[in-house]
Amino acid sequence: MSSHRLPPGSSNLSRFERPRPVRYTIADLEHETGVSARTIRYYISEGLLQPAYGRGPSATYDADHLLRLRMIQQLKDERLPLADIKERISQLTPDDIAVMLKVQMAPQAESWRLFSLHPDFTIAVRDRTGTGSARPISYDHAFDLIVEYARTVLDDLGHEEENRERFGQNGRGDD
Image (tube, rainbow, N blue to C red; front, side, top):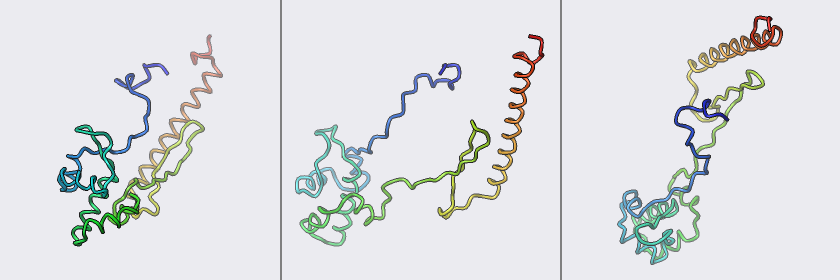
């Protein structure tokens, strides 16, 4: 692909990379949960949490750490001893804990409807059926206008192609 067809500043774009899992510092966990770094380290030493990824200031934690800390806090609020809390959460997966805490772990799936205007052009429209949020009627009207305009443009381009083929490259017929 030639660089003159790319948007300005896009020539140095890197290839698509899969998103990395979210990682937290201990300060992030403190901020998100209100649990001190010292207490987090204590929970790790007692086996309530898995160890951090790495050591020292560069150590990181994942969503499982965050969820388990929130679950520990909830169970502590119910006055359960740490030994009972450890026993309860040790068999739970992050998804189990997320359900218990009513936390959404993955983005909701989206579905799209595809409308073909031409073999080379398709319009994708988010399907909102079953999501509980209806599309405003003005969007349907806008969609109709977009489709009508796009078909007009594509028809015009098709006629230009036919004329070029019929009359030669310059469109005048005097090659």
